[in-house]
Image (cartoon, rainbow, N blue to C red):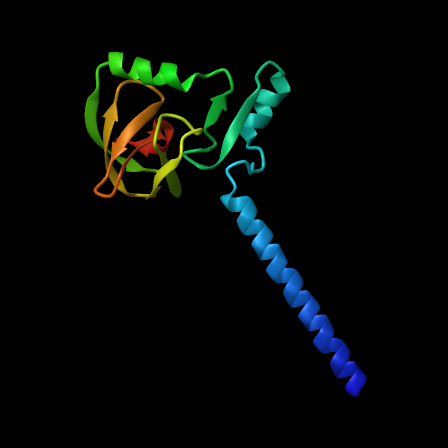
Length: 148
């Protein structure tokens, strides 16, 4: 009987350590910017064409948004200064939306927006728009904002 209790205690300890190691590894992968999410239907469709090399970000606003490797973020910034900027208030439609420090997924995350949150938007006609909140300013893909 004592051997059986010792065996279960050791087994429980091993399983607990394995679970802790699993959680640590998953947190490392989640926080790692190189971590890629499961491909979305949008990327699968483009992979079937065979003519586009695209990668997606793993979080909304990011999640599902597509970045062509040929896009030059400096050109996007230059183009945005030439276009007419319109100001409006929009609502976030994604469950969570990363706002970036620049117009693209290659930029650092400036803050997090949540579904239903209203933000001030500077729109210059590009795919990425500047959002302004009380806490931060950043860029998001306009696809995840509604004008309602």
